[in-house]
Every structure is written in structure tokens, then in C-alpha cells.
Amino acid sequence: MKRVSNDSNTKIAKGEMDGKGEEELKLAVVGSINIDQTVIADRIPHKGETLPGHGLSYIPGGKGANQAVAMARLGADVAMFGCVGDDDNGRKMVENLIANGVKADQVRTVKGVPTGIAIITIGDNDNTIIVVAGANCKVDRAYVDSVKEDLLGYDMVVLQHEIPLDTVHYIVDLFSEHNFPVVLNPAPAAAVPAEIIEKVTWLTPNEHEAVLIFGEDKTAEELLRMYPGKLLITQGSRGVSVGLSSEEILTVPVRPAKVVDTTGAGDTLNGAFCYRIAMGDSVEDALRYANTAASLSTEKFSAQGGMPTAEEVEKAMKEL
Ligand code: RIB
Image (tube, rainbow, N blue to C red; front, top):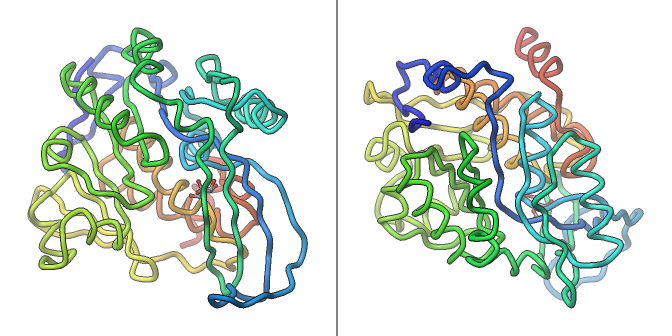
């Protein structure tokens, strides 16, 4: 197994490098599994304000599980590593992963803690989210050690910030020691130590997370030039940008969409980008593909409800 190249001019033929066909390429997500308690309102309430809601839903979510499902919808062979509580929510979330084609053999059911839950309000074409981590806190070093042998059999590991940061850094160290590709989507926002930035293959913050990680004194453009082929920054309505090895900055504009719900759009982008990069796309191709997938995901309700299939992404890209 070899590190995925970050060179935008190079086809990252990971499967070819290892003599593997595309169908054998295996991706792993170590991350959160939540149930999303979602309410739609006319707009996001102000501080101290009460608004009527239009319907309440309990649906699969969690940034880790969302990214795994996004990849599986696109055709990836992907496994989820994480923890749920010994409760109905946990069982339903595992069933949902399996129903979406995500391997869930290593998802641990932990007694005495509830499955993670996210309280989501949707309004104004945006959302607010509060997460109660529950069993996601049990994705600790001991859990990683117990699945380590299996985990190191994957071709790429994808991480977010909804499990303990100590675990995230532990996995980055583990994978980089073995020279394996690791992608960190640092959401929700938290500082990322310089040595972790150094070790990851890709870091994919949004613009707010980028400020928290790198400080306010550098513009997104300056940061992208500092980390070509490593840093990808999503910038809301301004699209998504990456620094290429040619020193150019590639910005892919937002694809126009009839937005219903933006929840999970970032997860769709991350999942699609990781999958396409692992499959050997150039950075530019992977980003355009991921951007289209993310935009399609906003046209339906819920984090996972609008995640597109490969056919849907390809059709939308032709129409662009
Ligand atoms: O990124 C969206 C996700 O964030 C939701 O599904 C919710 O569970 C929170 O983790």
C-alpha cells in the first residue's frame, strides 16, 4: 500500500499502484454515528425566540456515517468504524449503514451510553446543529487498538472531529507511520496541531474552520498556496478551492441548486472527494465531481436523503 499522491497533475491510480482493480479498493471512515432530530421552521430562531416548527423527523446522521454513506452511494467499498449505544437508535443507525451498502461489522455497541444525537433546525436555506456525542465518545484509543489490524487493511482512512480529538490524532499518527493516506475533515471546528497537518494527506476545512486552525492573519488564498495538494477549503456561496502543485488556485463555483436542505452537503463533498481521489482522479476532476454531488445533496431533505448515486452525478455534470 502506498501514500496517495497529492500532485494535481498526477492520476492517483491507487488501485493500479498496488495491482488492485477499482473494485478492490477499500475505504474506511472512523467517525461519528448520530440520529438527527430535525425540525423545519420558516427561519432559524433568534436567541431567546420561540418559533413554530413544521414536522419533526428522526433520521440517520453523524458526519462520519454521512461521509461513509455518501461514498457508498457513489459505488465505493467502504466500512464504518465507530460506536453506538445499546438502544433502538443505535440499532437503526447500524441497519441504515448496512442498507446503504456500508460495512458495519466493526461498529461497536456500547452499554450505558446513548447513541449520539444531533438536534437540527432547518430554515433560511441553512441549519443550526447541536450534537450530544453519547457513544461517539467511546471511539477511543482502546477501540482503535481493537480494530487496528483490520483498519490497516484499508486503502484510505477518512476522519472528522465528532469523535475524541485524541483518537483522531492517534489514527493520523498510525496511518502516517505506515505511509497510508489519511483525510481529515476538521468539522466541527477545533484546532489541528501543526504535526497533524503535516501528516495528513488532505485537510478539508470550511472557511470558518480554516480560520480557527490557521488564524486570521492569512487569507484563504495564502493558505491554499502554502499547502498545495493538501488543503481544500469550502467557502460557502464562493465555492470550493484547492491549491494545485502548479501554484495555481482552483476554485470550483457552487452549482446552482433548488435547495431544500443543506444538512450533510459538506459530508457529501468530503465523501465524494475522498472516493474520487482514491480512485485515481486528478484533484481538479475529483473536486468538480464532489462539488456536483454536494449540490445535488441539497435538493432533498435530510443529511443522507439527497446523497446522489454516481449516475446522478454524471448526469448533472453533463448538464452543467
Ligand atoms: O454534517 C451534518 C451532520 O452533523 C448531521 O447529520 C449531524 O448528525 C451532525 O453530526
